[in-house]
Every structure is written in structure tokens, then in C-alpha cells.
Length: 219
Image (tube, rainbow, N blue to C red; front, side, top):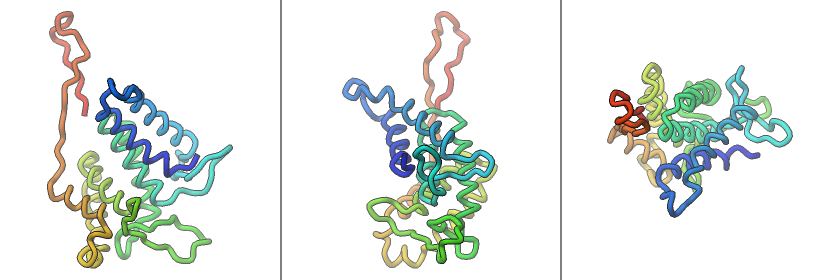
């Protein structure tokens, strides 16, 4: 199992569980459980609970260490799944992974995130910030930091600080070639417009049988 394709699928399945009409797409009813199963597999087989680190593949055992894109896309998938289900365990896992991403990949001198983890075999660590057919890890991380700042208010200042430093580290290139940073620009637009929390009431109880029963809140 390679990690990267699975991470995109977690987000796709989480969103699919909400937007796909079940009458036309029977799999819509399974999307949420499939995304949750993928997360459970990753947590059980590719995540080290003690160190908080990921490995990026699995075949009869763990593969090489995770890189910035593995963390960024998995955190995105967890936040998407949290928004769909309201289950705190997904948010807490995302917070834990972001802590590792910040500790191992954040550039404390210039801001932004390195693409690779510290490794004695890597002579030069680069910061690959331009978006191609696939968004750069730093661009996805910007979205994640802004969402985490809204959800995990205790760490909001740190998330905001790291996001601002990442924007500043790319400021010159953003001015000269914004089209090369499409996902970063999208994160800037999201931040300028702000985030809204939407709550809906899910009626799971019979009010005739129990008039005082209140339906749970789904975020």
C-alpha cells in the first residue's frame, strides 16, 4: 500500500458521502465507512504512536519514512472526515500529525516547510512550494493550518504564525507568478473570506415517544 494515493481517496470518500446522491450512486452510503477504515489501517500500520511519525508505504511491513506530502494530505483527509462525521478522534489525529510536521519539516529560519524529513543521506533539503498537477505539500498545509486554527483554538496562535511565515517565504514568487501557486492563492482567498461553522440538527429520536429528547449536533 502506497500512502499518497490513499490520502487523496480519504478526502474524496469523505466528501462523496455528503455530495453523492445515494439513489444514483449506491456506494454513497459506504463512503464514510470506507474513509474511516482507511484511516484506521494507516493508524494501525503506518503510524508510530510513540514518536508520532508516519511511514509512507506498507507491504508485509512498514516502508520508508513519511515525507511532508504524506502528512499534509493525510491531515487534509482527516479534517474533511471530521467535518463530515463530527468525530473528535479524526481532529485529534490531525493535530498530532501537524505537530510532527511542524517539528520535522518546518523551516525555522526562513519559514515554510521542507519537502523531505531530516535524513543523513539527504545533502540538501528543498522547499518545493510550486503547485503542479498535484498541489505542493506546503500549499495543502496552509489550508490545514487555517482550518486547524479554527478547530483547535488552544493552538490557534501557533498555527496562524506558521501559516503567515509560509506565505511570507513565498511572497516574492507569489507576486511574480501567482499562477504557479494556485493552491496557495486559494488558501489566501479562504483566509480573507473567513471560515463559517455550520451546524445542522439530525433527527434521530422520536419526539412523540420522548418529547424532551434533543437530536445530536452534527458539525
